[in-house]
Length: 254
Image (cartoon, rainbow, N blue to C red):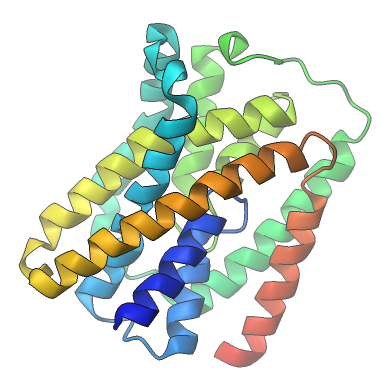
């Protein structure tokens, strides 16, 4: 991995982290096209750790939300399923970081998003504010998030999908997904650094710092654009995108 690779992957991470199209999946596919060794421990860690840049973007835009104790407690409840799964299945999850897995999950997720949006068309939502999300719904959304440990599924996609299933409106489902990303990605990144501390030499550390900065800048724009988009459109476009990208890479990877 060189500086150009770091910048390209960080731009991809910043743009895709909060879109329901799987940032990790795109990073794996992009790394495959760039000829980056997917079996290298630092490469896998880099793809996880630069998500911290996206976390900083959420904190910069929504810091006031984190002053609400009740909301924080709901985020903690929502984090638990993924946290427990990550702790016990870390090594198994790492073995899934492969282009084949991403292709399958992109296509499957895209189909499910289209079906869900067509099913929900013209049906009113029942949860129209963050305060109205119950602890039970928060936990269920967390269970959906746990599914996103499979590369290509999309953390934001899974939580937004879960929110829509539980009758949250699109804006609230999306905002809750943004906020839930903070504890989830912070702990996931920290745990990954702990597990792979031996692979972090001076050059790799500088690559991570550069990646965090680039990811932060592009994540800011991506969050603002997505919130404007979902105010006027459904997630069907993202479902179609997932299917198209998945099919394109199917012929490249296989």
